[in-house]
Length: 186
Image (cartoon, rainbow, N blue to C red):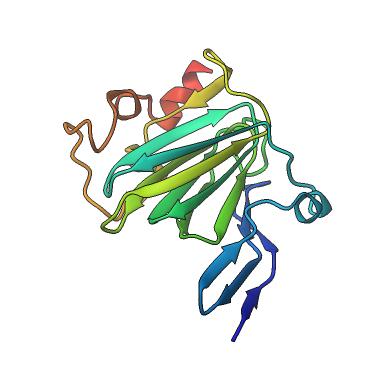
């Protein structure tokens, strides 16, 4: 038996943040997922990509919230995570909106420039989180950052976060400004 899930997109509470279900074909051997097909993405006004990174993140660890001036396509390749985004674009109609999405293999999120991206790896095995960028990352690249621990964001991280454990959260992310303070600095 073959099970096919078609490529589809869903809008979110953040303008331009798009949740994507990859085309997936499953048979007795396992699953093939189309991580990127130019015709599907271009037909939906998405892509192309100039750099691809993969992080491996231990369960419970948090990365983010970073909002560079480039479009990102993010997904979990193995494991699972809770993805979180906050719209930090001052002129956006959804400025300040927060969106969370459970990320498992087969789900992607298209993140517009200026929307802060973060996640917490869940489960019992490390999560491999893939980022595709429409620009190459360079040191000092323009962007914004806020702490994923800001209570005003209302993100309910599923696993406890020990703020003194650098294997759970970096000092850079822990000590980043709160969203309101980040805005005051802009």
